Length: 110
Image (cartoon, rainbow, N blue to C red; front, top):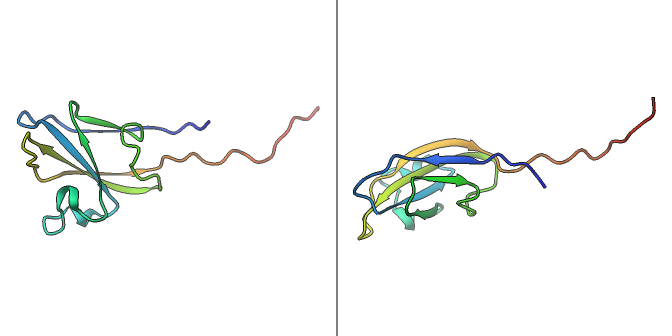
């Protein structure tokens, strides 16, 4: 069993929103207006979030990339009809893999 430190992504609630959509990418430019197509954006992973304003990673989002690196997360507000806001963007370095265990060791009498 490994110990992997979890991360919390949070955002402030929007009263008009019935939910949110979280997006993740290694490329910040994908969130620019000329490239961002919400849930149909190529190369982006999304997750709908209802009833809360945070995600605990990796538990709440198993599809979140496991490769170590800097990731950009965009959060949009979504209404009952499916309309979505522009994304609020945060970024951080993520690593959800523990280093390997030592391969050798022992106990000696002194």
